[in-house]
Amino acid sequence: MLLLLLLLFFSSSLSFSSAATSDNSVYDTFVRCLSDNIKPKDQISKIVYGPQNSSFAKLLQDYIRNPRFSTLTTRKPLLLVTPSQESQVPATIICTKKIGVQLRIRSGGHDYEGISYVSNVPFIILDMFNLRSIDINMNDETAWVQSGAILGELYYAIWEKSKVHGYPAGVCPTVGVGGHISGAGYGNMLRKFGLTVDNLLDARIVDAKGQMLDRKGMGKDLFWAIKGGGGASFGVVTAYKIKLVRVPPVVTVFRVKKTLEENVTDIVYRWQFVANKIADDLFIRLLVQPGTKKDKNSEKESVDGHEGKTVKVTFIALFLGDSDRLVSVMKSQFPELGLTKQDCTEMSWIQSVLFWANFDNGTSEKVLLERKLDSISFNKRKSDYLKTPMPKDGLEGLWKQIMKLGKAGMVFNPYGGKMNAIAESKTPFPHRKGNILKIQYFANWKEAGFEAENKYLAQTRRLYSYMTPFVSKNPREAYLNYRDFDIGITDNGNNTYHQAKVYGLKYFKGNFDRLVKVKTAVDPENFFRSEQSIPPLPSFHQCKTKKRLTLQDHMH
Image (cartoon, rainbow, N blue to C red; front, side):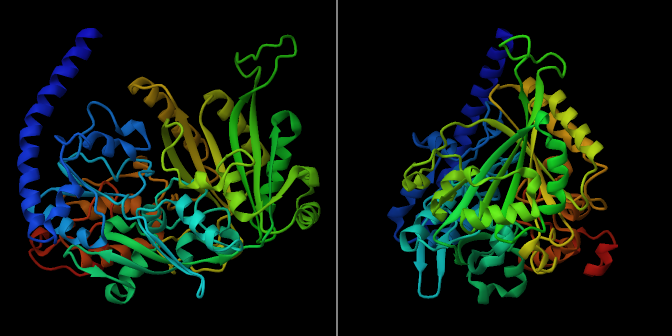
């Protein structure tokens, strides 16, 4: 083992040494190009970092949210570009194209497959974290927010201006605005207000030609594409104009935990019939995790076989109203949970943001401005959609799987409400009417190494496999912001369209081909690409028939 580690270290040292020479050349060439495109030139040294720079490693690491993609053997970027002004983004694109390497765009680093900061070919990271301004206009209840802001900063800025406004986006405050919105985005107000992109009014994007375009300039097709089709396939979205929503001065939350010993199967079974039909003001998420129970014959927790094991199901809710009305709604529509007023806590909307982010009661709102995570764990995510309720024996089999696996869990997010009122083709995100809920599979672990990684990846895949009979089919749908390479990738070669169609239909269903058409129009050379990007149709030179095929030809 020691010999192997020494060989790995020696090999990586040689690679780094040879790469450093190459990187110096890339740095010089890139900076010379920028100097022709950025004024004043003295800004350049403040925004471009090569591996030889003492700040490079820290800047790279700051927004790596999944250490699976930060190992000795992980390819590092040739350069980090950290623009402080949107006007520096076009030059970054132009110069990256000039030196012929790939560009990855990072806003918050929460993408589950590391797409924004990892590549298997030479690449540059365009890191947006300095572009984080938020300009709120309460007169028309809108805001311009730059892509490098995090959701916590956005929520805090809204709260400073108004105690009765919010924005329907994610519950994790450190998620970057850029990726969250362009991948559709959702949160615990989606049943009332829809997805994050359903409240998007305008955007600024820099295309592959280095042109800065607003909604009018980019046209309706490109604007449609970045409302859930993944902005990084089409350009660099630098800012969004969003529509704020009105929230009551008092909202109510609850967190009720149940185990197998508390009739959880019957409760969850009933919840499936209620969660997407209950009052639109109410969102009840299910968190399902393995757990242990006390052995009756000992104070110690037993984990032998299934003895001593259980499944913990937590019902987590946000209600846009007071506790009296919430209890009344629950008693009439979901009495099986047995909710009482003592289970409920009334608070302001901004305090509910802290509650959902698992901060202790009484925590200052300023914690939402914190960009660093207290702890970072290795993780894997997958997704599914449920169109019909699972039978009780299916739920019981699921509990057995979770207890057997021991680490992987699931989150069930209900749909209905506003989600039923918007057509599948309105945005690239198609998973609307007809879905009861969305499922997220998850595993988090602390152990480093391939053995641990393979073990926990296998757990999420086994849960996913178990659910096959119960979830959507033809295609088996998936959510773009829960990136998952298991469902297909492309090598961006000659067969890109057909490779991409495998995952593209899962993420976008019938909207995939429209996204391909937009991509072909705005980035035919496929400059903005990744393992799961939207592909352009093959160019004239790639067509084996030596003729330019139509979109319809390629679809068949």
